[in-house]
Length: 68
Image 1 (cartoon, rainbow, N blue to C red):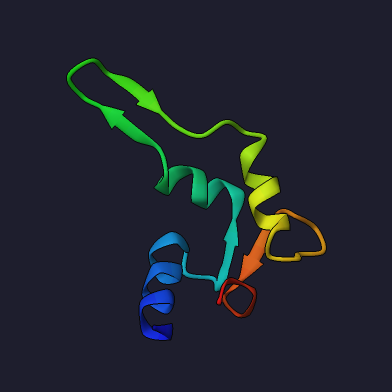
Image 2 (cartoon, rainbow, N blue to C red):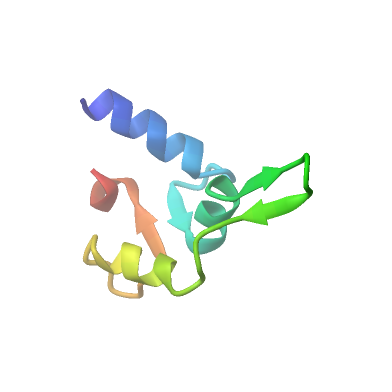
């Protein structure tokens, strides 16, 4: 199971620095419908709330240790 989590973390961590930041997650979770050229994404208020669920001190980033 941890191997799958590590792969998911690495996919989300687009710059490879070992820290997930809100902007990285927004990029990975934005869907563009190319037929209508419409972007679909989660609202900005969601990301700090999600990171706070992992008990981060800043709510702006997440390490793999907190992710797992």
